[in-house]
Image (cartoon, rainbow, N blue to C red; front, side):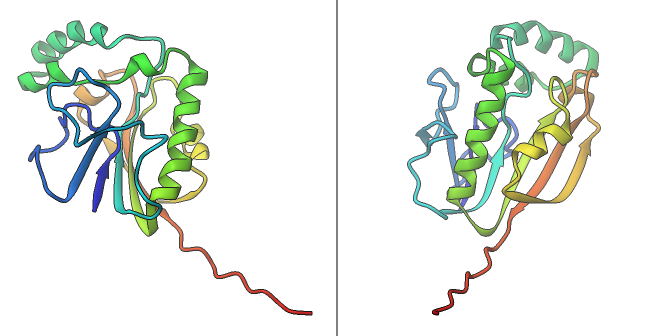
Length: 181
């Protein structure tokens, strides 16, 4: 089973309704409603429920999603991207400052470690708008980085910062041995 932990309007998915993907988001005013309204830092799922989690958190703070409407029009003109980009939702209202963004990332790290199966994959999208990739990866210290893919599409970075997709894995825990004295 796959979890999209910050589904937004599902703009990254070619097929918007797939049986083996559970879409969650906390935002009530989305064009495409999630499967479940839930906070990615406190989900209703049982431990080790998912094989794969996709996570695209807010990469910035102190902004409002309404600000993105103007940027969307500029992006359409400058990069000749499709109309769907105007309806992208970033979740900025949940990260009004640096501390709130870092708390969100730490909370997601803890929750994903709980709900992802051992050996499962966490696909994490990150744009270095306010926090470097290395700093962000230190937050996800429960996981091992398998691969880092640089995104070259300028509409993902607004030509300001580098964006990445990072594939991490939840390491299998070693069985602890107990010795009787």
